[in-house]
Image 1 (cartoon, rainbow, N blue to C red):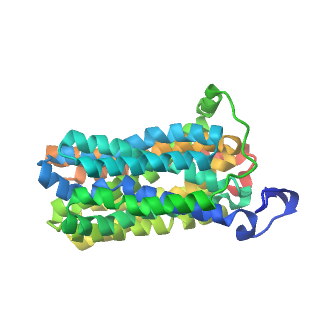
Image 2: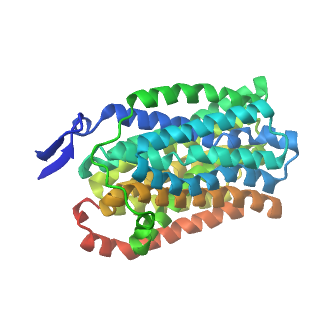
Image 3: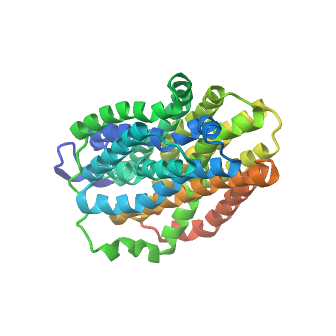
Length: 414
């Protein structure tokens, strides 16, 4: 079937035959989107790996630790809507440049002045939310260059930048031990600045961007049930992923008495699994359809998270977390294979809205684990409730699958 798409020079190739993924879009922009997303995610969850050290210095309670690591997630969720609007009005490249500058200046200021109170950690968390909001920029930046049949792979590869959480888990605890956790905030500015320069040189806005609309028009998708369903599905997949990424360092140190560095290694292994399979999730959804892929995801995630609630050994918990992250990472790619199939014209704002829902899910998981620990002395209740949410998401997919397959114009790809 003939497909219209934009070539590497930005010139329309109307009714061109379907072509390979690497020839269909703009590879430098895809790389730039990945790098930006990767480093942004690294600093977005930075408070998680640093939490054991910060908690000792500031004498934080379990609930305060949970809220501290959850605040960047919530801030990022809300700011994703803002970034989604900016993408559609001023373009993704400029939106990304503004966001990166805010994060770099914020981290530099925090390092220079120091963070000396629980309130200070929350203020820093809000600044780091701008990094989490990169999601609503990096994905449209990359995906607008690609035709529908390659949307899953493009958004999956750009979204693989969530592997930046691995970098935070691996290096932040070691740097904190060597130089102090406050110094890590300043050191993070170095790779961020390097990536900012590369981003400005490599990224290019696609020429087929939709025309700017009135502000109220951007929220028209919320009048449609499909938008809310996609937001709910992503709240579970991405919410589970980022909530665990932020919380696992605390879990491993509190539950099994690991040092922050060893806890960081364990977290990195779990997060790497979820990050690695995100593009595979998009490709899997392209192959078998996002609906089938998500149904499998929710079953595995529910079983793994329920198992974690009763795990008594580090090996058992680690294995179940890896399994959960593999499922959730696959689900992240699968949801964003579906989004452009239904909302191609509103992809910028829908990326922001769906991403916001994912961030809210992550905020809930991270904060609820801290509350559960403080109230019951165990993390189990938090994991069991989120496993239940995975089951509800599965039931929701059962409810909508027939209607989606019979009413969407791209039904053959879902």
